[in-house]
Amino acid sequence: MKYPGLGDPAKRKKTLRFLAITAIIAITVGVGSSLIQGQISKDDPLKVCINERDTQFVISAQLELYIDKNRADIPANIGFEDGCQRSLYTLTDDGTIYAEWTEEYPFEIGHFLWSWDFPIRDMELSKSKIIVNGKESPHFINELIEDGYTYRAEFTSKDYDTSKDADFLPPDL
Image 1 (cartoon, rainbow, N blue to C red):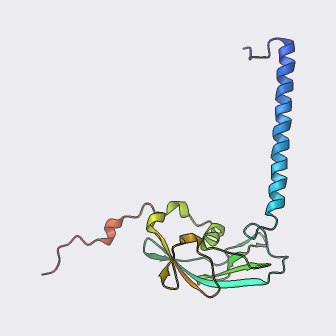
Image 2 (image 1 turned 90 degrees about the vertical axis):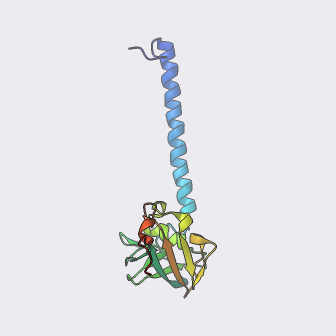
Image 3 (image 1 turned 180 degrees about the horizontal axis):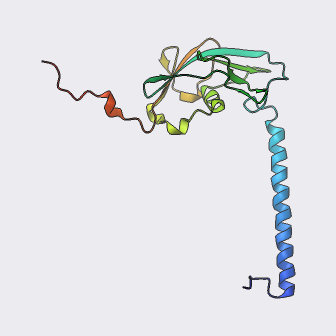
């Protein structure tokens, strides 16, 4: 089978040269992009370890999590992986979340859920809400984490059966 551009020796040489130049450009762009992204991300508090950093900004808040109207546990040691401590973490499973950084940073509830790998794509966001100190937040997961505040995250999963919430029996007379 003859491939286009490889039958004639002159065309073959041009085709292979073109493919080699394209491969070199692609590799250069890929490596360059990785290096640039690495330099930009080295001071991103959501991506780096804080083990060797002097963190002066430390806050804690309480988070209660409900999925399909059932309380869900927030596990201990979120944010600790392979000797690396992230800026958003938990120490115990009592719902206390901590945020640390070298300076004040606008940490959000969504940042914590992202660092935890919470399956937010499996949730029905239009039926979910975040309650801050007893009041529903208009910012949802973009609500800022404030020191000492209490947050209640109520999520409804996409496969939740709402018919379980209704009682189809006739009322008692």
